[in-house]
Length: 428
Image 1 (spheres, rainbow, N blue to C red):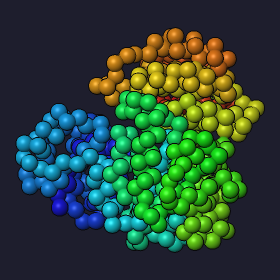
Image 2: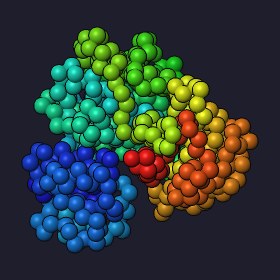
Image 3: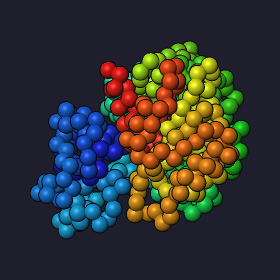
Image 4: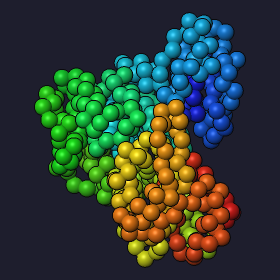
């Protein structure tokens, strides 16, 4: 089969493309800019183009798969429509790919990637040989975000954006948290949580939900579910190499999953004990200058910010913590404004970059960053500045702020990770 993936550089679609290529299909695709993920796809023999004008679609294309970021009016989608080629979203395609497998789906507002990473590590070390798709790059997968396994187990990260996970056929669900996000796609917390209730009801009668029943949101969403429910909070908090209670809580879900699958607890705990994190999750990138530790994290929601800063304050208790935060979308920042401005209390200095415009077509209002910084300084009681572009932030850090022994955290789901790379590169 010939498959074309529009938006192939995305963390999910790139994994799907690689898996289909490994299965023997002829895969190609496009994205708007070069990236390490695209370079890796090319190294596997998958052609990737940065022109998205429709000219690269194969003449005898069987399937066109698009990222959620690719609108219906995009030239490639219009071209595929004119030819009558079947078009499906990434999650529709993933649902078709995994339909005949025993699907272990990891869902939730926060912690999906880390939980999937830990679960993958346990399943591999237990010899269960799973296929994996995860929203980050893993040491356990040689720096990749996918694995083609030999068993019928399919471990995947299930995203709730636009109810995408409703295209899956879960047999087991690990649910981390459900406190609300993606309010460009959901009108309210109630509508957001209803999407999860629907997903849980997709479990077969013999299916299982593993969650934290001490979490009021998780308990409410799972209430009345006529399926087996395992409370991960009944298990101990596993020891990990990475800091943070939130990471240990993710590991509790994996411990419960391993028990359910019949893996020896010693094997599970051993695999978790040696878990050292993954790409963009409190990832220590290196050092800048005289002993400045540079850490990068994907967190872009107030609850995630609190968890990461709390973990790092505990891990680096005697050092100054400087946080560079790149807000991710105007809509999210405005919808959760009061939660955001109170989330930075564990930092010593906070620099805000300009808002990352991930989905400009859906934005109707814009954040006043000077006011946002002033409000954060008042609520979080921390030194805050609106610093502008990434290049302006880098200049401010290197020319004025950074001191020997500081810990610098770059935080956000957009391009802020490039700043950590640049700073570490300056020290090489």
